Each structure stands twice: as structure tokens, then as C-alpha cells.
Image (cartoon, protein in one colour):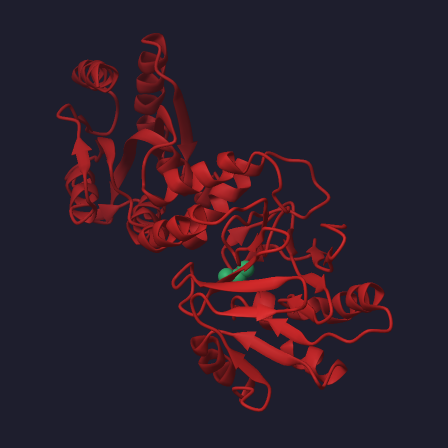
Length: 384
Ligand code: FEO
């Protein structure tokens, strides 16, 4: 992939990994992006995952020809981008490493060296000139690690954004950017909305023509769309006005209540998406809770607690600062139902949650009173 006359792509596609960061399913793989800026001096932007050293070094050699790189800019120390720093130094022993001070501390933990003989520490606003290209560094702490920096190239107006604006999926698939970028963002960066907002403010002060993330495609058109989605996601605003019903069901009785609610909401013109937490992609369901404005949680009492998939789901929501949504509850229990109470207790520290007054309380199987409760809940949701 050629990004511009001077900026070349040297990243790789990983189609073998089943779960990214050990928990996110990636049926369409993922790319580890790396770029080279060719000028009087040459800068390589990040390395790639450990399993792709040879492919990446080969890509680099093809772009460099007879030349040698001068700098390796390390935007982020997570191993999917930093694992090949030592292999790179072995191949190009004169190279300098450019990164934040925190990155060199983390490097010492990973590699046993802080590269003191070859390091260039950069901070907010520092500029590294390659000749015509001037690289301006931007601190982006906790997006999503503490040492993260971004780089703005004043000549091409490209910004290298580390994991921000990244997505799951290799570069050779044609899919909807927002779906997999949302699942990536909410899952991996979602906890750090405040920090993302801070860096978006810095980006808005720059004239940006191209976004070069560490995963997924380079973005060069309609940038306001991508920046707008990041603003929505990082400020915890719903993206769409719709209801997500997330449920678990053991013998199908809770599911029947969910189906009745779904039916009732749709009949009233509401947009509804329903997920069975035991069977769906858990992190797609997590990202959808952030996507939509309203959430209904339906589960059973189980071992004096709630059904494990629902517990896991709510923990994932809390971990990512789930807030600013309307929530309804459906609970089921055969002899001592506590699921509704436990779900609410789990969410009590979450900010700006509005609870629907009408709740559905099932004792084993749906009764007449439950149908009335479901109708009342549907009416309340639609009236909002
Ligand atoms: Fe793609 Fe946070 O590493």
C-alpha cells in the first residue's frame, strides 16, 4: 500500500490469531500497521507483533532499498507493536529510538534495557525534522496505555494515532469500518473517554488530512465522520436511539418474556436489537450497549446470584464506564428471586443511569401479571 510519495506502508496482516489481547474474537484477523517516512532522514513508525518479524523486515527492506533508517518512532509499547524493537536494532544497529520517557521505562521491563545509548525522549510539542517532513509529537496518555504518543507530520498533514482509530480485521477485507472500530474502541479504549476527549481537542487544532492508526485502514476521506464517532464514543453519548435487550435464559422462560417485550416495542415503532449473552459475541454485545440509548437486562437468579453470563456482561460495562443510558430490568427466579436487586446493585456506581419504573418479575414461567408488566415497560420505554 502506498500512502503518499514519501510515506509507505510496511505493516502485516495477522489471519492466525483467534483472540486479540487474549479475549476479543477476531474472525477477520487484524493488521499490525507500520509506516516508513522517507526523507533526508528516514523514520519507521512502530514495529509489529512478534510472529511477523521476518515479513515486516522484508517489507521494510523493499521500501528502504539501499538506505538505512535513522529513527524508530515507538508510539505505544504494547507488544503487538513493540515486539520487534530488538530485531530491528540487530538489523539496523545505528538507529535511534524515539518515544516518550514512560515508554523507555516500560521498555526496560520488556527488554531489560531502556536504550539509553540510542534513545530520544520526546514530549508534547517537540519536533523532529527529517528534512522536509517535520514530526510534531503529541502526548496521548491512557489512550490506552500511559506512554502513548501520537505524531503529526506537518508536511503531509498525516497523524499517526497509535491504537486510536484502529479496528479489528485485516486490510484485505471489505467490511463496515464503524462496526469493528466500535467493538475495538469500546473493548480496548472505552474506559478512557476523558483521555480520548483530551487528545481529540489537540487533534482538532491541527489541519489533519490523513489518519494512520496502528490497526485497520488509513483514513483519508470524510475524516469528520471518524472524528465524530470518536467524539460520540468517548463522551459516552448514545450513537443511535434504539433498545438493546441483553438476556440469558436457562429453560426459555426468560427468553419468552424478552420476545414479548421485543414484539411489543417493535409494534410501537421502536428499533430493537436482542442478544443472548450465552451465545453472542460478548464484546459485540458490550459495544452495542454503548451504541444504543436504551438497555433492558433480563436474567435469572442463579446460586443466590445472577446467571454468570449476565454478571460478566455487567462487569464489562462497568469496567468501561457505562453511563448516560436508560435501563430496564426483567428478572426470573423460582423460589427466591434476587436477580433484579443484584443487577441494580452492580450498576449503582455507574453515572447518569435512568431506571424505568416498570419492572418485570417472573416466578419460573410467564404469568398474566407478567404480560401486563411487559406491556407497561414497553409503554414506558416508548414514551421516553
Ligand atoms: Fe494495538 Fe494497545 O496495542
